[in-house]
Image (cartoon, rainbow, N blue to C red; front, side):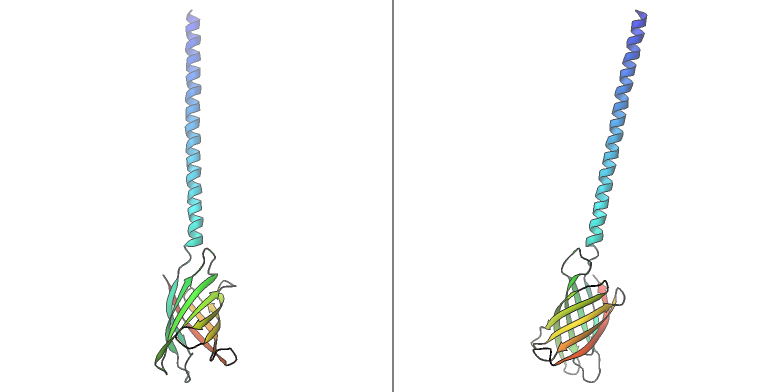
Length: 174
């Protein structure tokens, strides 16, 4: 009988060790799964932030010889708004206004620009202050803040009577 008691005790201890080992393995497996889920969520958030957080709009100062016969630079402001995300700078709405010093009046253009290359953009726009003038422009971001543009602006309703102007300035993200 004594052997049976020992055999039952060994069997109970063996069963308890198996149950304890399974619980520990299950807890360990559960911890690993939770860690994997958390890492997956972090990576997904990081990817989302990388795609959508780079779309800062820009506001800045611009100078152009548009509207100047004496080669004066006319000051203005520019606002770049991203229309579509997450594409990196693919399509922007650009609003720009100039103070024409010789005429002592304001003029403004509203344009759409797209970026076929990372720092070079093309755009087409129209004057929104009364005159029916149109512009086509090519621009280059020299740095994240400094830009230059070459513009072809119509002096009437078509591009037959158009002139070439330049503009450049500095933009700040917001």
